[in-house]
Image (cartoon, helix red, strand yellow):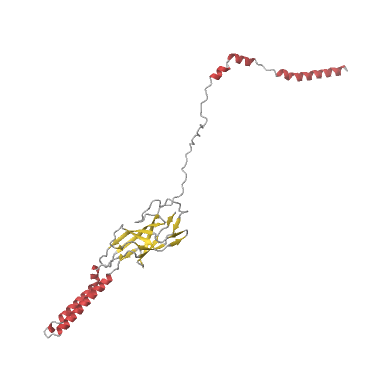
Length: 292
């Protein structure tokens, strides 16, 4: 019995010692803190710290620039300008608009126009002539009204030349004025005075073969005159002796003109070209025209 009591007391004491041991371990040693406070003055430490930089409330620090080389942005492909044409004048703001939203007059469009001045082979290269349309032309989203103005520049010209070559005028249409807008164009003349022309060349009549025919006619007419002269001489008893001479002369001249007519025709000139004002022409566009 006593042994059991002793064991219980011993266990109780052991448990109490285990419970009380952490309390004693939690006691802190503050002697070190007291020593630091006596040696150092906390207020002096705060005074020695550097001041923070003052910044305005609205100012922000700019981000550092990236050291990585930047490639330039890719630009949209630009439509190259049309090749410069002789006599084609570029007007201001001709191509400063979006072609995707502009109104287009298609290439190949034909206009019936009348000339406002005389067109002849007297015109020199670089001279200007004008035309006015006489009929409206309807296309998608637009009707080009009658009264539209065109201008053309003389690309080449010459007066009648030897060898039967006629006069020449070459016009290149370089501008159109429609609804108050003037645009540069590239066009040509396809009809002049209701006659179809080729390669944009308005030419006077070539008269080489006509010159050949004229030379033969001259020889023939001279021969006929000599025959009549010989006939008159033969009616006279005195002139009968010399009557063959005119006929023989006429035959020689006729033969020379007949054989030499191709050579003589080289000195003949062709026909002139002169188309009066108010004559009808046809203009054909060789490139698109954009309006906005």
